[in-house]
Image 1 (cartoon, each protein chain N blue to C red):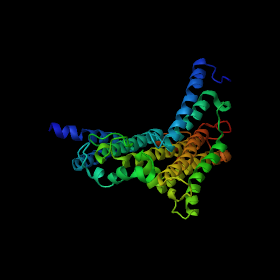
Image 2 (cartoon, rainbow over the protein chains, first blue to last red):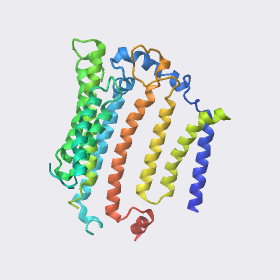
Image 3 (cartoon, rainbow over the protein chains, first blue to last red):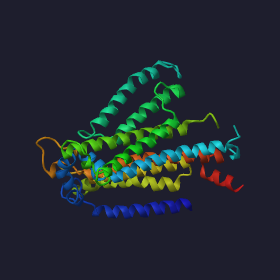
Image 4 (cartoon, rainbow over the protein chains, first blue to last red):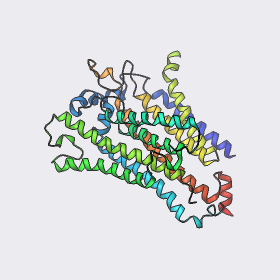
Length: 102
Length: 143
Length: 121
C-alpha cells in the first residue's frame, strides 16, 4: 500500500514537472528572460566598477557581498553545529544505550 | 615521515600530491579575480589537503590542524569578512563598499583589494569548517 | 519533433535526476540512503540552474581582451548563486552525518523499521 502510494505521488509529481518543461526557455537561447534582464548590467559594467574581470567573483564578492557574508556565517554555524552535536553526545554518553554496548 | 599505514604507495602519493594541492589552492585564491576560482574553491582545496593527510597518516599527520584549532580558525575567517565590512563603514562608506578605503589608488583597484580581503576570510572559514566536520565525524576513541 | 527532442531532452534528464531525490527519501528505509537521495536532488537543482545560464556562442564569464558585448559571455548570475549552493550542500551534509552518528549511537541502527520498533519498546 505504501509502495503504491509512493509510486503514485512520484508519478504525479513527475507528470506535473514534465508538463511545465514546455514553458521553459529554449536551450542555449541568447534571448531568454534570464539572459536579457539582469545579467547584461553585470557583464557590461562590472570590469570598470569592481576591477575584476571575472564576473562571477564580481557578483559574488562585490554586488552581493552581503549575501556572501550570510553564506559564510551559514557554513561557520554548520561546522559549529556538527562539532557541538558530537561533543555533547560524548559528554553524556552514559545515558545513551548505544554508548555502553562497546 | 612516520608511516601509519605502512604502505609505500600511500606515502609516496601523499608526499607528491599535497604540495601541489596547496600550491594550486594558493593560486586559485590569489588569481581568483582574473581566472576561474575564488574563496570557496580555494578553501575546499586547502581543506582537502589536510583531510588527505589525516586519512593517510592518522592523528599524527605532518600537516594537521586539530578540531579545536579548526573551529577557532573558522571564527577568525568569518570575523575577517565582517571586519572588512565594518572597516568600510568607519571610513564613511556603506557596509562592504570597498571604494571607501582611503588609499591612493583607482576606484577599481580598491574594489579588487577589498574582494581579495574577503576571499581570504571565506577561504579560512571554508577550510576550517571542512576540517572541523571531518574531525568531529571521525573521532571515536572516547566513546 | 526532432527539434523538440533536442531542445528539451536535457530538461527531461534533469527531471529524472531530480525525481530520484523524493523517490529515495520516501521509499528507501535506510537513513544514509535518504541522505544520498537528498544530495542527488541538490545536484539536479544545481545543474538545472547552470543549464539556464548557457547561451549559444557564449564563452566563460571572464572578460577577455578584444571580446566585448553581452552576447559573447554566458550568464554569470547562476554560476555565482550555485557556487554558494554547493558549499551550503556540503555543510548540510556534514550536519546530517553528525545527526546520523547520534541516531546510530542511540538506537544502534539506521534502518527505519528497526528504529521505530526500538523506540516503542
